Image (cartoon, helix red, strand yellow):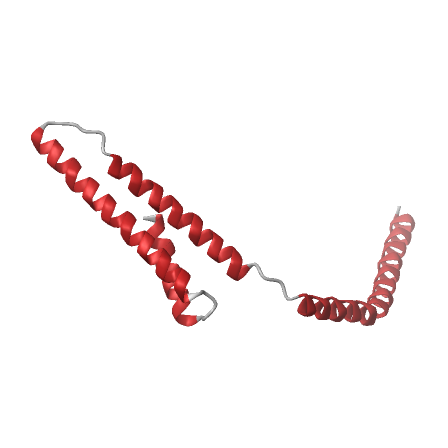
Length: 135
């Protein structure tokens, strides 16, 4: 089920974006088809064994499981190759913009904070005087 969900995601993503290499997707699809075929065969075999009241340890289930694991690992590797790329120039531009914004906003922030602290202190001072005079 996980492999089918991963394939659906990769297939849908590849239709909207050209990031995923077509050859790798075809390889993954073949791998998934092989695993699915083995799994279906193993299910059919186990159903026959249930009807015949015989039990045989099916290596097809293990082979299918191994192919599904390989499919998921290959899909993960493909995703890491495609989606974990960093644009160093873009990061430097972003850092410069953030630095410039901080430099421009810092004096405004300090002035506003000083004014607010002054207002809070005046308010506390007024309340303290009222409390002392009323007591």
